[in-house]
Length: 256
Image (cartoon, rainbow, N blue to C red; front, side, top):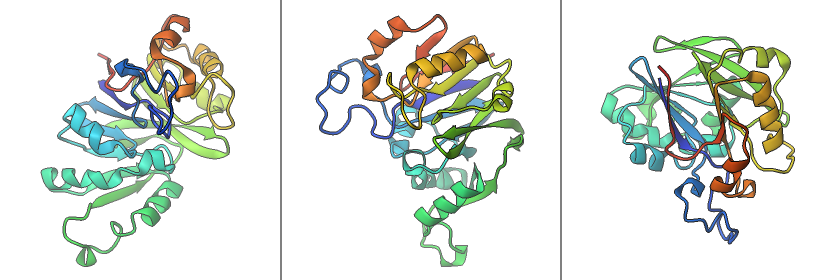
């Protein structure tokens, strides 16, 4: 399995528009963060988790020529806004793109992209075609790959993280119940959201994320959904405990 971090930034990305802080002015490529998303290659299949506003740019950068399915964590715009750009894969693969999400997410996608969700005989030529699959807090299969949802809270909004084998991805989160933490036992590599150093109403802070990682005990953990208030990548990494790193755009994680 190979995981590629397509984007590691929070909803505004980094640099933030009109901001002159040292992080937004940094010349370190690791401080340039598009909105969060990952790509997973496993068992010969190509999966994407979330299609944010930067989806097109991310696919071009990584030269990803196949998407077998998309999994959505939740319905916020920084995770869904790029869905329309999946249409290139319609043409390449000559089929509908399967998307997997909880009911509330599918409903919101149907509202935001209403022109996509019309009967095929009424569709404008070239519009994206998708096939939706409603998922619940129980394991499901995508192209022969077992996916285990991890239900967390993003303030009061339920959000799905996903575990595939020895890897787990959890982005927008500020609470994980004990029963859901148990689903993460034995995970070797974890990507977990941590917005900034200060506490936040709907995201883990750096300290809180490190505490949760200590409970899960993966071999390696990477922090994502980072804001410019977290600080410079090179400086923050010096402070992190052994085995914990900041994710960055383009990072690749390979599991045997």
